[in-house]
Image (tube, rainbow, N blue to C red; front, side):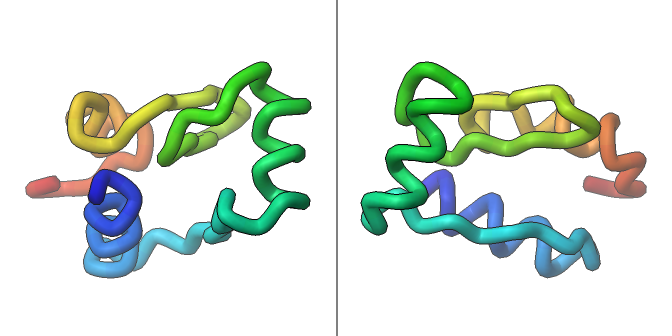
Length: 69
């Protein structure tokens, strides 16, 4: 649910993003290898790793400088 909300939010605000579905083993393995765990959504902005969307929405809005987020 958090993943869908993040994708919808980014799309509505014109933010380009790369969607990697962790149901695909190569993406799941990449997530675990790079970040040591599988938390979704994992959002990376300017090399900062943000785990989860809903609880971090304010932080994401500020980092992306989205007006009225």
